[in-house]
Image (cartoon, rainbow, N blue to C red; front, side):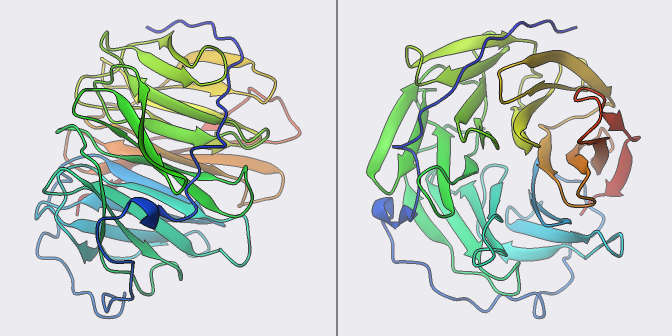
Length: 342
């Protein structure tokens, strides 16, 4: 289905780090709120289909899953690896007109437990909500401004290249160009012509930042700000209405898409620039994928979780892993497992 040869590309990221997004905020700074895990009630939409794609991040061994509910508010749940259990869905309120993007800062003990969620609000602008204690309490919603193309949402990724735990945020603007914002400057365009939400990831080895979109021709495109500051096609065919997902994977990173046949396809990069071409994870999915990679279950195991909505409206999950000291391309994938709807 998909063929591709890729050369080493990278993105200089000195100007796209977010230490504090308040530099572009139109509203007041984030303050504490009362929506804690203990006070959130069971949602009235229990058993409902998930209306769009989800977003997942990991902290140590555990997963944190976020999705827009049928009431257009933000909902989340938590997977505890030690007990192999999910919590119930919990509401964070808000009014979403996109799938959420979520990122955690997890490399520094002082920052462990911080998560940031970003959405397109009812006014088309970028909004955020955050926690510093793995969801025990959450901030109020804060408007970050800008304008996001209808039908698309934001992307956010951890970025440590300038020290500390910083965040970069990307959106598809009303002109289909990709825009980014940082504490150092307001909104700036990266150009391109996106027909999806963007995806972004910091490479785990060299710290380069990569941005991916579905292009005008339906293929996967990548932005490289170092070599000509231009977009290049990586081939493939992405299902209309969906967008790519990217995650750190060991010392490199991986990109996942929903193909035109509704299967999940993926490709992987290593620090030295070797790209393994498109490979299928099969399944029949009806949303964009979301993915998170980490080394947490075992110090010798490199693992990745991929989730997407199935044709039954429920979220489905597949897990891949390999031994770090083994064959670098020898990934072992489990079977697709349903984790139900909302």
